[in-house]
Length: 254
Image 1 (cartoon, rainbow, N blue to C red):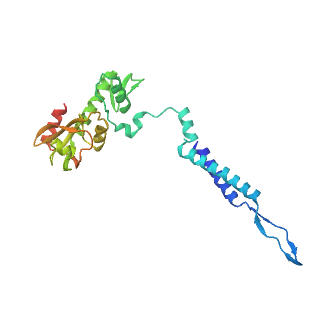
Image 2 (tube, rainbow, N blue to C red):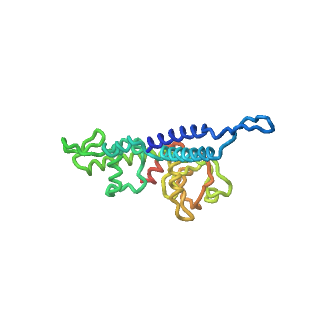
């Protein structure tokens, strides 16, 4: 599609250039008036002007179609590769390797098992008749899945080292009315752990009730605050928790 679009775009542009250069003038015959000869004049011919206009319309249409095909179409090479070659493993995608499971991490869940299988590229070696995960071999798929699940748990624990520290809030904002104070660490919003800007966006997007909960750490204690849905009206930054606060967060997350 992109190749066809590029070809149509080139043809259309060339056609436009040619159409603009079509001569629409004709020279009238000279006349003798009162014994004097008046030579002919160059005037625009309506028929030739219509012809140039028609050429410009068709050429412009080709340009528009070419731009659309080039912008939104896929290349023929891509289609060919898709139809002939086997799709690349999902685990080859770096974005997928770094992705997180948003639902409940239940090892018995088929959806979670599929996520682990794709993320860690679990596959069975036909020669060894064992399941391979990175450089590890397992006798059964259940053992391989359990290994990957433990890696997910460790990754989540490391992720929870970071929390959002409140350094400013708008007076009478949702956060202010809920009781948030400067220096609080926001660790959960709408029952979702907050350790990155993406977490915050996902938590806000998941709101379905007019109120929700906000969990903050303050002076070594966890406080659950009730907050109205919508913008919190806070500003701050993500930073690593001190060991004591981190230990508290791990206990709460367990």
